[in-house]
Length: 210
Image 1 (cartoon, rainbow, N blue to C red):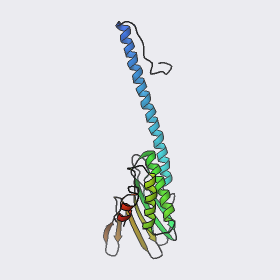
Image 2 (image 1 turned 60 degrees about the vertical axis):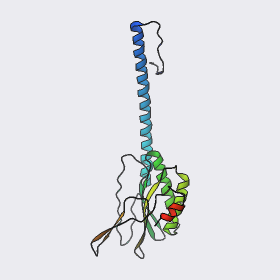
Image 3 (image 1 turned 60 degrees about the horizontal axis):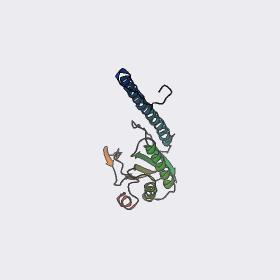
Image 4 (image 1 turned 180 degrees about the vertical axis):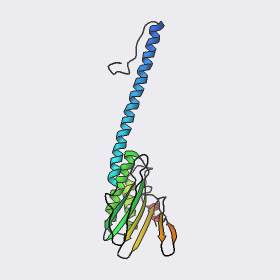
């Protein structure tokens, strides 16, 4: 036991105090083995948490874009357990896509799904096609990659500063966009219909997306 073999069990002939002592030593060894397993599992979880945290940090934008006539700001609040949630900016063809995404899983699996979704979104939106077509392609790719039950919710707003319009899509994201109209002083909540990315390989997602 002193050499680290916590699975060793004593063998005693006879009874009395020596037998009782042997049983107590066996209990001690079993308790030490359990504690060692717990310590290894805790260390493993801490390492996984550190990896997930590093991946999550790499998903966040390093700087905010500057567009004449617009002020853009962001504020990211971490979940208690790091995962793949992220926001991002994608500039293409004079437009700017603003993304807010939440991933169903936590830890390393969630972080990897978030990184995959971010890569697909950047690639497809940068092609400059219609936002609906771009998100449909992202959904098909993501549905083929993620495990069943994993998904990514998305709020996407594509800003066109030339004609001052914004095109919005929502894929299962629970938090609506808030629009304040200065002329009327009214606040509107905007949340088009749509299911999360990765839930369905195509038909249902395509038909629900607004």
